Structures are given as C-alpha cells and as structure tokens.
Image (cartoon, rainbow, N blue to C red; front, top):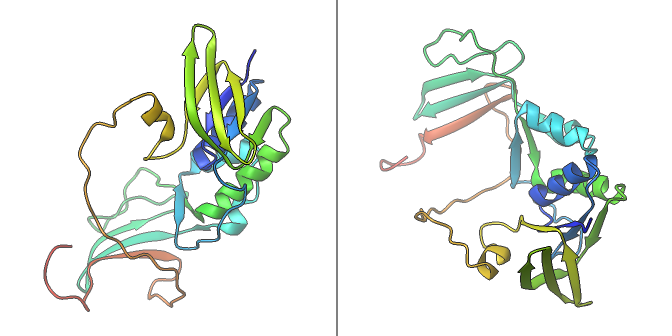
Length: 220
C-alpha cells in the first residue's frame, strides 16, 4: 500500500507515525523544520500516566530523566490556600481538606523539546517511517485511490499516499488547502512565561497563584 502522509513533525505527528509503524503501516513524515528542536525550558507539556506509557511503548524512552512528577498541586488566592490536590499512586483530591478515595496519579511535566527529541530518535530508528525535513506542503490533490501532495523547499517533491493526516497545528496548511473551517471563537489572552529556579514552601509541589499577594485587584 502507499504510505500514509503525515504533515507536521511536532509531538502529534511524530507519535502518529510511530503508532502507524507499530501496526505495520508505512508513513511519510513531512517536516517544515530542519529536524532539530529549539531548547525552550518554559514550554512544557503535561503527560498523564497512560499517555506517558503509550509514548514509551512506541519507542520514545528516557522521558523521566528530562521531566518531573509533582507530589501535589496547590491553588492560592492571595495568601489563602483554596485547593490542595496531592498527586501520586495513592493520592486524591483534598479540596475539602480530606483525601478523596479515587487515586490521582502524578502527571509527567516535561519540556516539549525533550519530548519531541525523544520521539524523533524513535522515528529515526523506525524503518517504516520516512522523514523529509524543510518540506512545506503547497499543493494537495485527492482522487479515488489516495492523495498526491507537493512540497516546496530545497528539494521540491511530489508525494503519493493512501491517506493524508494534518498534524500541523492551529494554522494548519492542510486545513487551508482543503478549505476546512475551524469553528468557534478565538479567546485573546496574553501570557508571560519564564523558567526559573526558586525555593517554594512545599518541596515537590506546584503552586498556582490566582491572585498573587504582590498584585493589585482585578481579574484572576
């Protein structure tokens, strides 16, 4: 069969190609970038326990050494504790001050570049996945037997596949070429994200300040 064409080599596209290979399905992974990851410590992903297990089963190993599992999560308003969620094998939600009976495993917080690098290493070792870097899709044609895609870049190429999957993010080129709408409204928010080292009163726990004591009144 013709391979599945996967557009986008972020965590989603990389994982999809590995999952297809695990089932004996070949794929072509089209990557706009150079095939390397920019180190950005403040850009993290949070993997639930089952998701982290899936990624490791697909061959992306060693995530624990680059990530961190919190032992708890605290929400503060000013200096008042409003929610305390212990995390771990036997932990539960203590919003009322009492442990919940249902367990809440600790998710894995990991920089996105570390996750993507581990996935790329697994893809490089997978013979059923062909990766093309610096390849941006600019033409897409469908027929009764599959799909034909053209990429521009240093080596313009036509690709033939049985299916195509767009994993190229919110500004998806695939979706634009197929005139597929993205329904809904956009919420405009501004965030400042930074990575720093600091001693917290509760070692191993994350703290969310909804209204920090050093900030004036207004929205959270």
